[in-house]
Image 1: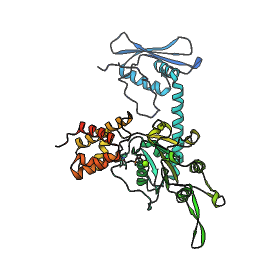
Image 2 (image 1 turned 180 degrees about the vertical axis):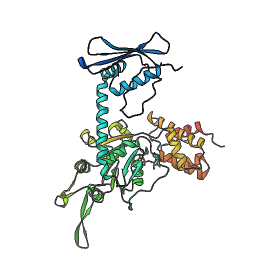
Image 3 (image 1 turned 120 degrees about the vertical axis):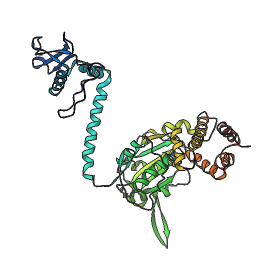
Image 4 (image 1 turned 90 degrees about the vertical axis):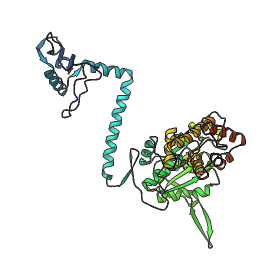
Length: 423
Ligand SMILES: Nc1ncnc2c1ncn2[C@@H]1O[C@H](COP(=O)(O)OP(=O)(O)O)[C@@H](O)[C@H]1O
Ligand SMILES: [Mg+2]
């Protein structure tokens, strides 16, 4: 015998007319089902019958309690009735109560939001349709239109691991938003953008602000060549005109004059005014995208002491970007990246190395170590280990020589905790 038990839950979900209906076994059918309001209202009541395996169903209309149908049916018939009532728009009291509770508990906002999200998606889908002939490449769960192969397209790193954190960023790229990635050095900010570009065929230019990048390098300058005075475009107008992706690395080290120039370009389709060239206007190529990475901006400001010379980017400036915080890869992810990069490693070996990196980062977070342990450093150390066959010897150039003697000693003890050195 089938029993009608289980949670009534929001059991009575009403699918569209021609949908295939879910089985009813798990729903409690007892109760009142209503439709309409006031005099136009109608109800069905389901209650246990005196007879085994039978149900009593009653029907009434309007606001009085007068019953005009009162009969007994078996389970199969009841199931057929429930389906019919759903199609006709009857809703169980239990469901109405659930909905009311959800609305009271702030459900109104989330329900309204979900509705807006659906509408936005439908509008987006309708808009995307006419361009369906443009070839796309799928990254994570997002379809990105393909660019054109050119000399500046980065090489694909087959070992690169796209984690869930990438989906929103790729969608921002599709929508031509300005994206800033913040996080510790070596957490994968630059390589993320490069690897998206590599897979979708976009050329990438990089400008590092923690160095000698001048406003002239960035915007352009006049120079004399063969007796003639000529204008040389800087990296920004080149990227804008040619439709390259421009990564401004370590933006929190940029000169104020560079930040000022950038501000105008930050609007989607923002144009660049070359004052030095008689106010020439540079229109952005449709493929042009602008990215920045920063170590100590925004949510990373707490680490400013670790990145000496980093400027605080002000809020109005930050508000022109979508800012994503990049954490280091998790232990599992980093193990995966090690195995993909160096397939000769065994999994236990890769796990041990990833665990050492994780411990060093924990020491860094406690401020016992001043240097963050990047994925780049870990891969380099592992490569050298495979060449030398010696954990300590490999750690010299890959790790120890880059930090103070005290820090090297601490890292050595962390490594020793995981690995038994020979001799
Ligand atoms: N998700 C990842 N998959 C594979 N390798 C990664 C990943 N994230 C980081 N790496 C490795 O770490 C290195 C440093 O990353 P990078 O993008 O230069 O860091 P950042 O720009 O944050 O300083 C990369 O060259 C790459 O080898
Ligand atoms: Mg970088």
